Each structure stands twice: as C-alpha cells, then as structure tokens.
Length: 390
Image (cartoon, rainbow, N blue to C red; front, side, top):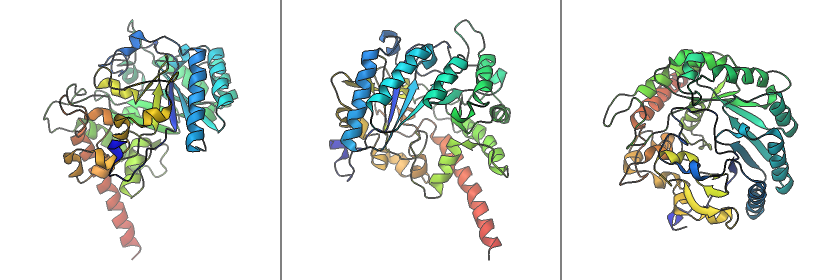
C-alpha cells in the first residue's frame, strides 16, 4: 500500500480473471510472448488446469466478490490454446466457476480458432461463452507468423472455424478479432480481410517488445514511426467511412480519451487502473501475462490460489504501480502533450534494464504520431461542425 500513499487512491479490486486453462499451443507463432520471448516458465507448468485448481480459483473469485461487493466479474479462458482442453473438461470448469461465484460471470474465451467446431460451439452456446479469435488478415498475411511447428499455415482452419462462429445460431457469441500488426502486411488489405468476417470489434495489437528487445522495424533512437504510419492508413479508411462497419478498439479508446472520457480497461492506451489478474495452470497467480515479454519472472507475484487471496495480490507494489495511473509515469510521459491519452502505452512495452518500467513505451514516437493524427482529424471535424452551426 506504500505505493498508493499520497495518491488518495485505494486499490482497485480485480474484476477480470484470466484463467490459463491449457499451457500449450498447437501453433508456433513467431511473435508469441508466451513461448518466444524472455519468460519460459510455461515449460515447467502442467498442461491442463486440474479440477482442484479450478475449485480453488472459483473459491478465491467468490471470496474477492464478497469482500468488495462486486456486482459481476469477467472470466476469460485463455492459454496457450484453451481448445486443447476437451469440451467436457471446459463444461465442468465452467460449471464449477458459475456454481461457486454468486454474481453474474461474463465468460469469454480467446482462441487461435484452429479447433473451433460444432462440439465447442454448442458448448459455448449452452453456457453463453463469448469467443474472440486471433486473425492477422488474409491467408498470406495470417500465415506469415501464425503457423504450426512444422511450418504449415493455419489460415484455412481458422477461416473455417470463423465461418461457423459467424453464422446463426452462434453469431451472437462472436466478440471480435485480434490482429497483431506486421509491417510487412499491407494495412488496408489486412483491414479488408478482417472486415470480411463481419466482426463486432477489431483489436489491432502492437507486437510486444521492450527497449532491450525492440519490436520488428524499430531501432534504438530511430525517429521513424512505421507502426503509426501503418495504423493511420487503417484509421483514415475507418474514420472516413460514413457508417463505420466495426469498432476498432484502439481508435475508439483514443477518441474517447481525447474527448474527455475516462480510461477504459484496455491496456494499450490510457490510465485505467489494472483490474485483471492471471491464474496459471498450476494455480500460481500472476500479473498480466504480457509481462513475460520483459524478463524471466516479470509477471510473478509469489502467490498461489491454494494459500493466498486476491487481496494479498492487491497489496503488492507492482500491482499498485499499475493502478495509480499518472503517478506511475516517467517524467518524459508527464511532459508529453498526449501523455494522459497515451498513458505511457502498454506497461510491458516500457521495460528497460536498469530503470525497469519507469520509461516511455518503446512505441513512444509511434503513439505520439498516431494520437496527434487522430486528435487533429477530430478537431478538424469539430471545427467544421461549429462553423456550420453559426
């Protein structure tokens, strides 16, 4: 709690619980933060979350709900690849969680989509489980990075699963697409390929990197903004469409913040207090698993659902640092004209050996250019509207 002293803020209870129900994957994506980056703890974890761990997790969530009088919570089934768990195993897991937690539980699942079939979709339909799928564009763009260990592309399997998900009666379960930016892929072709599946939302995700391991295309001290340029091409197309066909979370969040809205729970921009926590297959409690991209052990809390409560985790300085917003930013970020919108970027992307996370994002220049472009665009339209009403 010392990290909160002087801020006038109390810890924000966890409302989103990410359950790593299977720690392995049937793809070998080149940019995966879990298998290809600094933290390799997956190697020593059990493949599946065992029933006794599920029971302990559910009990801890129920305890947290009661302690903070939460009206509802969100539980996300994640991996690895969660569909490496059989439908009957997921069915039992969901029954345990919903049977233990006394408030509404919004259940969601994030999958690579290669195993989506009727059996899983019937299960998700029965339990009202929302489904988000990773897709990086058309076949060539997607298969550039999202391939099996022996080099086979995954696009056709993912597209087949998406076609089932996006048709009645399962369409109502579709929560959106997650697309990791690859500078080698044409941005507008990528955007159109995503739109072809009529997603309710698109998450455009910057590939994870740090100052010690920069993402592809960014060099130390390089003033270029290739990621902003890529995203701006899509933004201009998206924004100029009279009836926007889809919500793009990154753009929506930036516009919301520029217009004075409060930060959402998204991690890419803004100053929202982190209200999510990860539970690994063995019951270990972790911070955001994306911190695995920084250094070995970065997301570790030292706590376990068999012996520790989520309130114990809330007391950690590392959690407080992700909940105090502006107070946790570097001086560079505080002096930036878009600092309160950017919020320092994704917490994991700030890491630099020697100074930890007290740095701007490795995407600092890109975020400044992207946010400034969006600000100038909406300011232009607001000014035009004001002139029309004079």
